[in-house]
Image (cartoon, rainbow, N blue to C red; front, side, top):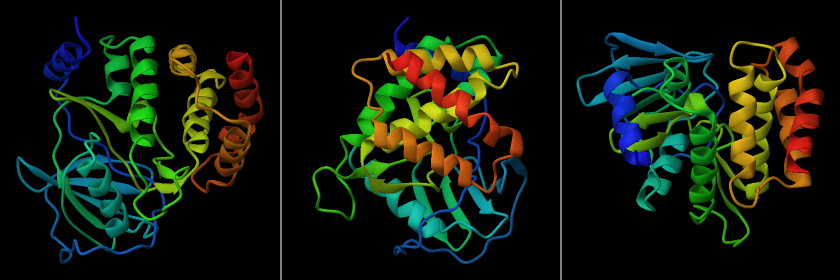
Length: 256
């Protein structure tokens, strides 16, 4: 079965709508705007945002905490989409509200739970998505070494749609060195892998596959900064912060 066929099969078996963004965004504004909207049926909730139904084609993602900047997030999404990167389309954005394309299919995490996606397939896909994103030129910086970074790319932020994987939750996006993006994805997976939770072994195998797909993009500076940022993340629990040391050790072991 080809990768595209696999996504179609998974999406047909597990219909779902996209999960909401869950973290602070940027402050840069765009021309995309919409007045505050009345919400429809609640489709999903994350740590700080909810997703509501508008109609069959569109959903409203609303930030509950007031941290995010939907217009800035939309600008990044539209920039990478124009360069062929797989993200939901955006119709409008303002303040804490983002109106975006309604996606069909499960997240990678949901596909794991249904036994429809292997950790290796997931890890390889994450690596390819990171490389594809870092091939997109920066939206603001003219420095050729600077790229768009997602900074939260993990299995629960990849939707397996009939048209292939699409990356959601761009609230953390910024521009910088690609090694930081790789470091963030690796640390997120490694925290789950060393945490002893039900998905621990799946996360470890996914991480190993991601780091083993071609030349790993993790750098020393990127890994150190990723750990620092995760420790400073206000949505992290005490337990999650305590796991960072073991998570970093696992990453370094897999890299050598």
